[in-house]
Length: 597
Image 1 (spheres, rainbow, N blue to C red):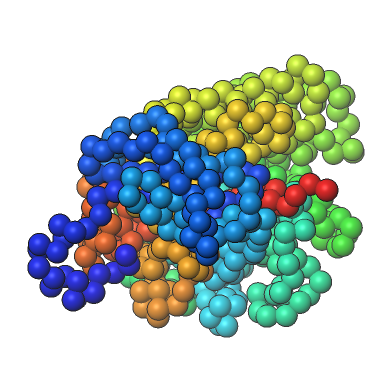
Image 2: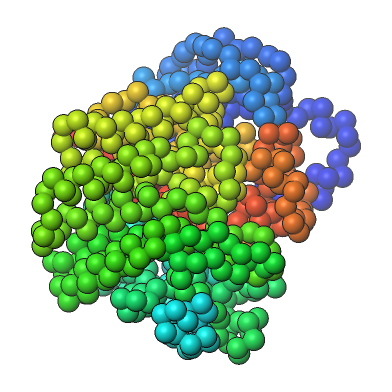
């Protein structure tokens, strides 16, 4: 259904009367034998179905049947919807579903349906590298940068500092410490929790060739090395490179001249005070949110490399404590700065970042703090923000509650016992329950608000569901967890995967908001796009123009829209940090797909 041809556009109007009015949405990656397996039947007509049939796509034999069950009614563009649950069928093979005279796309059931998916998404992370870019086999942004807002730390305005490295944030070329530290943490965590999932096919610089280290660790170290540059001294920490002047034109990354300092770009200091946002000031109140993320990434990095690179591990441990001290300088949030547009990362919470940082720092053996004092400190943070505020809400500001779920609860719960552990896990359960209260009324089990980067929220929420299940063995929310994963790979109103090129045989984005694809027709394999937004948000955004006919026009609604179009930066732009979170989720899915021996 990708990109109508001119011939199709010239067909007589009468031919469209033959177009289907009902569809079956599936997870295009497939399903593992022991997992929840649900497809969604949806129709633009007020129809009812009674049963479904599962058909072997090779033999054409019906291998399972079931009742359609509850009609969920209207959702988005559809007047009627059903959930087709075939979880009881576990035999590997290729199949399709039939229901109400509608045939689904073919899909696979098997132990290896998610094999290699996490590594595939690492391709996008490598393509986002700045400094030396292994995809382009060239370097970019090698003159960064000059310091702003560092006067109180004794840094003269426009002082030159070397902060070359890291990742471009999205399809623009800004770089943010908060998103990069979070991405680095997720990559490290993915290796820690699922080391057998990842392979070694790339060198440290991202070029082909083995180097004895899993590629996910090469990528995590690329992030850590940049964070070290962004925190070069105990009293120095930087929040971002460049600003929205970057948006003066889409281009393949190179050396930018938008900032009045030759090829240098501005490097914003973490001052703990409001900074410029065009005619406004951002709402920065402190240093904790960004510095807390630094501390957690450094701490997990130190632990990860302690047996293979002790010198590097010790450096990261040193930086853990200096970043932690910086986080405690001025308790509060550090927001990003912009110059021309109103769009920033408007983070409003920092307690979760400090909970995670404290879970690492206070667990160190050399901390001269009594065990009970440690527990009280950690529980004070956990109790201060028990539920991530967007969970169960209808909306939120852009990146208002970042990193979308409370990562600290997971690390803390693993350290606690008894009532304290139950309390922290209960916070996860309450957050999931709030989403479930909204999701259970529609056939897609959709309880995530359609705000900007809704796919990032979806990924993170699926991780929280996974962690809750792992911590408790409680499968109450397993179907909700799977529904959020399925949504990302095609079980959504548009029937498309939200990840470029994954699966290779599926309906995936082909025209993202990316200079790589738009200018050079380069693939952005593995990039997770922003995802659908409320139609009301879409209509209010600045500068959106669709360049092609909308192949998903019949699936747009007053509720939400998604466009596979270069011109839609709100729904079809890939993000680095969302992709890193997805790498963790895909690694969890692959690791969990293996039969227990």
